[in-house]
Length: 80
Image 1 (cartoon, rainbow, N blue to C red):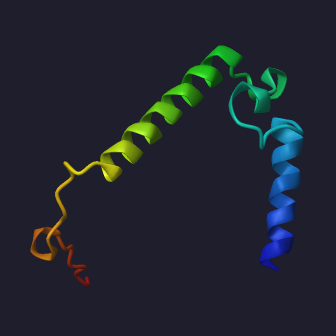
Image 2: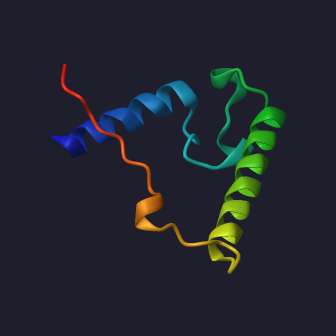
């Protein structure tokens, strides 16, 4: 059932966003359907790539201090 739902979602997205919606950046944008200009999609995609690169570099760097178990905040869920 989940697979059928997945294909239904893809069909709906393709209908509303255009057949190239899976492509990254402005290649996947159909401005007639999304009403989002290509320049905005380009900027957002470029920013996303830069942020992911920054995060990857931070994780791979030796400067990153390991998080100790006692430093992790825990959230207790109360019952009402």
